[in-house]
Each structure stands twice: as C-alpha cells, then as structure tokens.
Amino acid sequence: MSCDAIAAAAFLWLASSAPTPAPTQPAVVSVAQEPLFVDIVRRAAALKTEASAGAADMAGFKARIGELADLDMKGHITLRDRGGDGDLKCILKGISQDLPLKLAAIEGAGDAHARKLALDDMVYLLNDNVEVIEAPPAPPV
Image 1 (cartoon, rainbow, N blue to C red):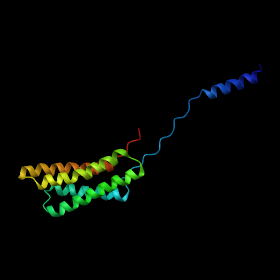
Image 2: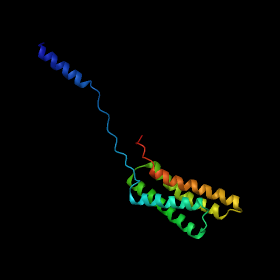
Image 3: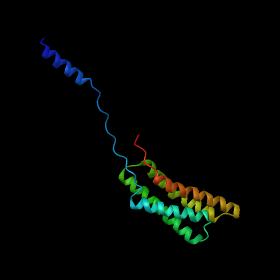
Image 4: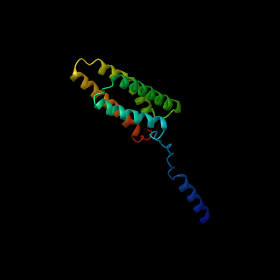
C-alpha cells in the first residue's frame, strides 16, 4: 500500500472518530418585555404596594385583583398556545387561581390580626407574580 493510500485511510478513520458536535438548544426567550407580561408585572407591583398599606379601598382592590387574575390566566393561555415555558405557564395559572382565594381570606378576616396575616399572604403572592415573570428563563432540560 502506498503512503498516500495509508494517509488517506488514516485521515478517513480519524475523521469518522471525531466527536460529533452537540445539538444546539433552541434559544430561551424571556417574556418579561412583552406588553401582556409588562402589564401583569406593573399591576401586581401596584397591588403589592396597596396590600402592604392595608388595602383601604377594598372594593377597588377587589376589582383590580380580579383583573390581575384574568391577566395571569391570559398569560397562561398565551404560553400554553405557544407550546413553551411550561414552568411559567403553570405558575401563572396557579397564581390566577390563588388570587381570589387570598382575596376571600382578606374579606373573611375576623379581626385586625387575621386581616394583617391575610394581607401578608397576598403581598407574598403578588411579589411572586412579579418575580416569576422578571426572572431569567431557565434553559430547557
């Protein structure tokens, strides 16, 4: 066998045993700058401030919580229809379902201490609503 043939065979053998490049992952895109999610964050932050201050205008607070719950569900449906970001999609659905429950606890509080605890729970939920949208998305597993 000539040296050229041996070199060609070695080249082909080495080329066939080279590591294959890893498949590229699709880019993970944050929804934090999309108008729907910007609106959710803005409203949740404002309601968090209002709840922290005691939610004096309960009728208005109740209406705004209902609107936020609807927007969270809309965010869930938007992400579901895209077929992406399973965690955020599920979290938004959960928040949309928890907001009315936390509101009912505030309305049903029997005394000032119970009301404060219920408002604190609402503050935590509203804070979560902001943070889950603003957090950088995790890469797919």
